[in-house]
Image (cartoon, rainbow, N blue to C red; front, side, top):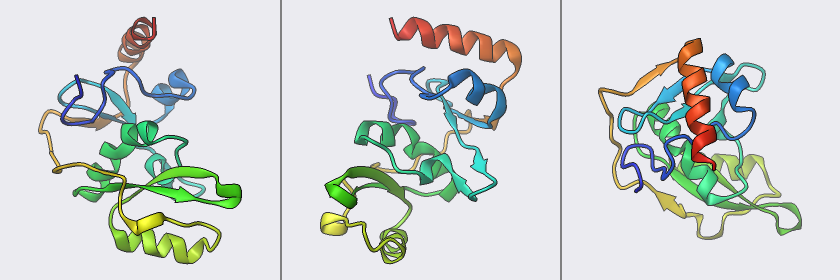
Length: 151
């Protein structure tokens, strides 16, 4: 069943890459409905959040959509971007204007139709959600549950 707050079918699917490192060192958005942790850390070097980066699939982009909405305090959309050699990626933008700005700066990128391939129906702000770093016990429990959910 898909979580109506964070759009995931698996409560422990994230972090995808280096989960222990991410949970120990990065600030997490903790879904108030299912408890899934989503990295909401800003990269100081590039000034970007994790959701600003391109994703290989629409499904992966959906896993980070909630953090974009939380930062922007509004709905956001996922757009299919085609780059060099017709390589497809998915990027989250708060508005179509943000997409246009990105395309102007990245002349080698295209977005067919310039409309989102996925957009949440409504922005839900859950008072039970948290933004914080996890403690050691929470990390241990979360990683154990993540491992069990991948079996």
